[in-house]
Length: 442
Image (cartoon, rainbow, N blue to C red):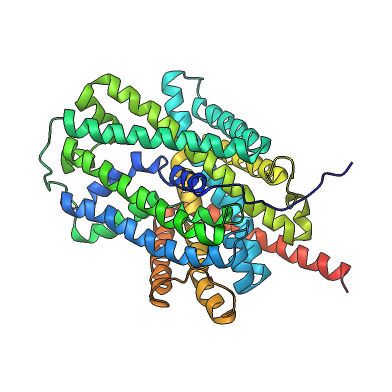
């Protein structure tokens, strides 16, 4: 008997959606990038300003996405906007890039971090981190295949544990860690502030994943604005407060020179038990990021299969579970392949960052352009939310994305080049799909 196919249903509450976005963004980056930001700023005030600016820049993007998600709710998210604005070719290349580079790389990245910390507790040999990463991807992909309820409740609990843990770190550092003067003794130059912002915006990345659940949020035309703006507000508060705690407990120079600032901070406050707690918290954060990315990522694969004949097997939505089963399986398989790639290079986390960044910012830029195109081309489409200060807000968003695209190409190296090459391999597949469509519809 053939499997009955249906479309996504609005099963997520506003809290579910916010938990997904916060769980994805407040992932592993906040435990690594504050030291890099501090090393590229000249004072504690400038370092905190960078994190506030990151929240402001993310808010600019969220306002643009609030209009797109409420006017065009669809499981394809950015893929759907590109399809309407530019046609099938750019949309296909985005979906291909998301399936092979952006989302799968973003799954493998926190999976490696989980593996690094799990290996400290129970090492499994030379490839211990990769083995743990593979296990996490298999287990969480399976959990999401079981049903949307299982996936969302897992995410809610992981996000709650993460936020509570970060709150404890902030409180403990302020009340128990000896204060270090927030000196300005780093060797950063004024020109280094741009580099600091690259790390800040990398850490804020992921809020746009709200677009891929816009068709599954209850009363989405009203609530998606709350999801986007609420998520950005929560994330900004968490990031600013945790960096304030770092500077309070380590000082700017101490933060800049630390390879594990959260562990160093808790060690100063409550000893080695604090450092062990941090390792556990980072592992939980990595799990939350992996699960949220698996949940949202498969939605684009589903939309690709829905619209392109050669990938039709991806466009099947399981009515009984409320999930795109085939899309999840393919996403999991590619993510596992990237884990193997990272294991072979022996730089799993760094390889995945380089691999995903240029392609991500390219299509993020195009999504901002799509808003401008769709507002002009489809003026009569109902827009429950309109981005304020149009067209200046989306133009500012496009400028931010263009700057990050340029920066990622400059700094990404061979990993970024590999990601671009994988993107280009989608062109022959696009031509093949066109040829097949033409032959069947003369």
